[in-house]
Length: 262
Image (tube, rainbow, N blue to C red; front, side, top):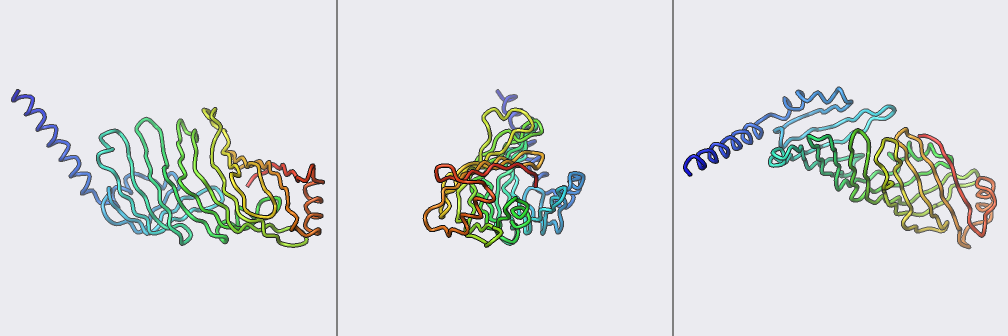
């Protein structure tokens, strides 16, 4: 019996020593040892400890765009390391607005982003929306976004995105397209690379009666399959422009199907 308690005491002391060593590791040295710059991730102004640190800025370099998050704080869960998981609460500022998420990386190659919430203002969203066939502008709010990566590809996605104060630049005029709540999802058969992300219009507020879905593909391509059933408040000139761009309505609905890349 005494040998059992001795082994148990040694185990507890060993775990306590590892946790204490982990807690005292400076964030700057730990981040440098990880070599994140190899993956296009750069941290500036690092302070604190590895498990509870701060960075003045994190920059993620994408092929044509750099994502910058400022005033980043992270808090890593020590007990999850014993389960083979690197898990952290992360908060910061993106485009001057708060962003927060819970990040989990397991030893088995699964990466999770949970409860991601952020807001993107009109000026920061403009480069993305202006590349569409009909240039749009507006504001975006993401709520409770959950993403799971397995085997190198995105295998699960859920959450809601709200587009607010959307305007569309038509040839004759710029119109107020209203606001829409989008459901983020993926096909249940998303077991291989290349599965699309679905953004389905769950609810819409505005005069154009929008419905349908947007598909986003990993190779930066997108597909639009939307319908518009305008109410009686739309000016005839705008309806004429919609007919030129989208073709004549069928049973009062304009259909918009389009494929391109960002």
